[in-house]
Image (cartoon, rainbow, N blue to C red; front, side, top):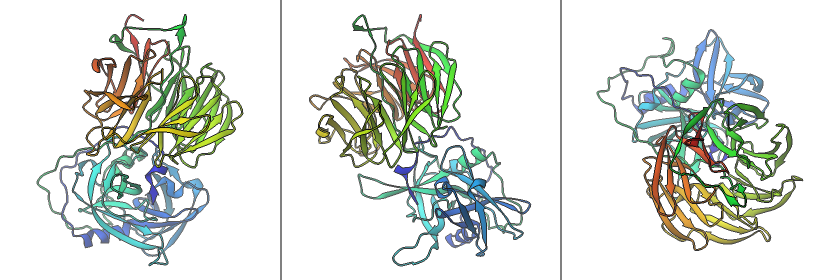
Amino acid sequence: MNFLPKLPAILLGTVVTIAIPQLAVGLSPTEVNGIAQQITVRIDGANTGSGVIVDKQGNTYTVVTNWHVVEQSGTYTVQTSDGKRYQVNSSQIKRLGGVDLAVLQFSSEINYRQAELGNSERLSEGATVFVAGWAEPDRINPERGYKFLTGNLSGRVAKPKNGYGLVYTNVAKPGMSGGPVLNDEGLLVGINGATIPDGRTGDNDYFGIPIDTYIKLASVPRRNPPSTNPSPPVRTATALRSTTTTPAPTPRSQGNTPRRINNSVAYYSRSSFSLAKTLTGHSQPVVAIAISPNSQTLASGSGDRTIKIWNLATGEEIRTLSGHAREVNSVAISPNGQTLVSGSGDSTIKVWNLSTGAEIRTLKGHSESVDCVVISPDGQTLASGSRDGAIIIWNLSTGKQIRTLKGHSKWVIFVAFSPDGRTLTSSSHEKNIKIWNLTTGREIRTLTENPDLFALVTTVATSPDGRTLAVSGLGDSDNSDDTIEIWNLGTGKKIHTLSGHSKEVNSVGFSPDGQTLASGSSDKTIKIWNLATGKQIRTLKGHSADSVAFSPDGQTLASGGYDKRIEIWRVEGR
């Protein structure tokens, strides 16, 4: 069983739902277990886990499992329900779409049952679900053993990371990753695979990937397998329950600092933005963007593991930078416009020559996904935040570590230098925003005591002058994620609460003059706010923006989205 903080922050596009006219319901748990035992396989090798037989072509069977179960090189053994073992080499295993799914195949003349694919979109909270798999040994069981667990769907994730969109109460054990999630009809509705502790309650939440995600990525029809499968009893359902969604935290990228023109920041009409261009080219959601100091170049990071460099004026793609083994979570451009830095789910940071696209070096020091990177105002220092809870300060020229800041207990989603480069602001998913002295490496203060602060912080930005903080997240009741709070970092007091979005806020970014805030939301709008009054100025309608950034000249706003697009908004008349 994998823990969700170790998984990349990968998002999927909209899943196509295929209507099914009838639902089969009401099998007993014993009957569902009989199906689970036949379709569940045990996987051993460089890593261990479980899998599900989902298809057969001739004598070749297809098994779906989690990518984290089989990502290490080597030979794996697939054990079927009859105890037979089949060897599979890692070179024959295929990852699906950058999410935590993989498929492998083995050949046999024996007739094994294949899972019947259900419709995960029709699951609603409270529905009974079953999780099966081969658990690791523990103090009571000295050997791996098959487990069949009963529970209920407790939630759905609106912005799933790495595909994990189902939340349930089944207490899955290590070794069960990749096993089936079945509904009470015995249909496969998900793939089990992640656990995350809830810091507010101390309990664990258990996550699976909806089977609709597999159907889309593998381009398979939702159909029943061949009639060689035993047919369970079927009864007709008379009604469907509606579903609701709950949001998932999403890592955010650092905003830009203003470019000075004749020693003053360029101003603009903040209510006059209109859509100028839409940039396409990424094959997965765009979760990080940065704009060069001269406002001519845009860098975008995506779940497809690449960084694309764009001409901001023409919208033309200049080049694609490849090298990360997992999704790119954050990008930053140096103040002189010559260097690009990227943080990835592969736990590394890469330093690039922005002009040539050449990789300069790879920085290794974090043990988990790097979710945020930022370069100091003088261009000499780099700060990185990771899901390992650490912040590392680097010498950007040499790639050497200067120091590690430790104090966060959950993954770090945001880091920002003060304008003088002497202090650093950081935030994690806990109710915790910290200010650090970079000379000593000591914590100066923590914004945690105020009960008005979100219980779970999900997106943060600081103003160019370093005095104001914008933050959004989840309240204790998980219903406050459509608002944004504005805080005075000097006093630690809240200035405004910005309300207007109808769904969770995914990203926030300050204008170069610090007077305006842009916010991107899953309600498919970007809102522009006057920070002096806390009033909404304008709503831009387009896509679910996972990242927003103003250009340093203040004439352009860029947004990267869950729909894999980048939208360029310009001051009208430009």
